[in-house]
Image 1: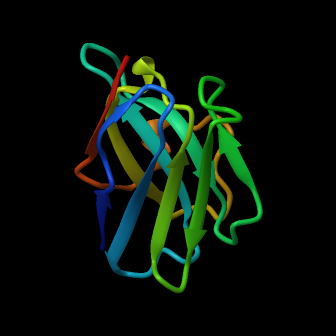
Image 2: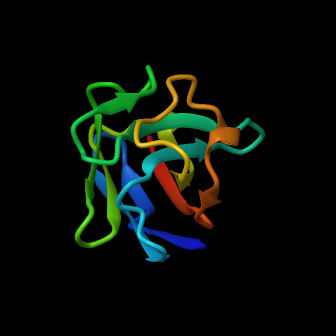
Length: 127
């Protein structure tokens, strides 16, 4: 079993930056594909970014390309999401997730592909 805990959320002005962290405990996530998703009020959870097990391949949703960067430190069991040039529409609860069955994220980035989820961290961007 893997437990994921997100941190780093908060309130920031539009144009600002935040760095989210996702720390894993329990079994190592070293070989798992990892992803970040977000859910805004009244909306479905959507894909934000994903990364393969060895930190060589990254993937992004269209709305965050060029602004967000996903990375991981397997030695620390942590995945990061650096968010720059934040917009009001980035306001959401952000979740990290682990796909235990794949080294590389499935390119459909379906929620069902991910086996472990964190509790989420709130990001609020004021305009």
